Image (cartoon, rainbow, N blue to C red; front, side):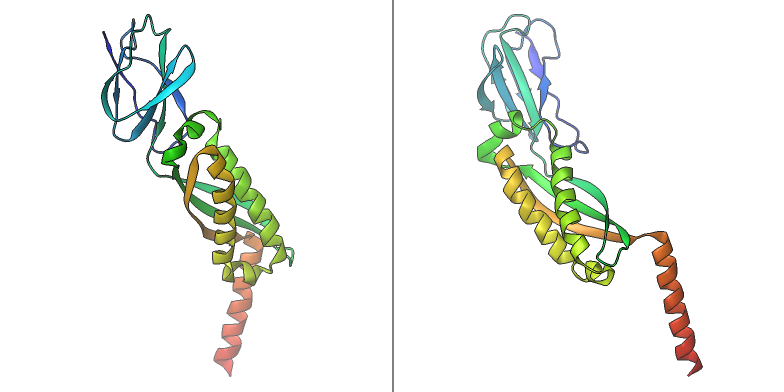
Length: 200
């Protein structure tokens, strides 16, 4: 039999599942699973079991019709989400959030089959939390309460993504950027204040 080598998904891509086939035509009776992969065996399209890293015999196959594979990366993945919203004092800000996610080992089957696009789903949840939280704060409070926003995002993601087999390790607000005109105005105010202080 030929040996099918299932290539790992890219680290920079979200850990969505993907179909895989053998590197040689004719059969999928053997498979090599990389250490940073989780691979499922499918027989006639139906899930059978999860394979451990290394070389595995998966059964008789004809032309890749009987046996197939589905793979997903087991690495921790970090994605970034950028959301534009408005504060309570009507200042437009762009909030950048970093999210680290991985797989729940006991729920790998859900991660493989239940969610089509992990990144889009996480973006949607993060945007929902930020756009409901930030408008309740003044601009200065947004900077002061970055940790509160981070916790709100993390709690929401942990609750929602667990049903898809994903564990949220950390969500962190890494940047809050007001509109350029607002930044210029703030810089001018600070400049005038320093000039007044220097003249006294």
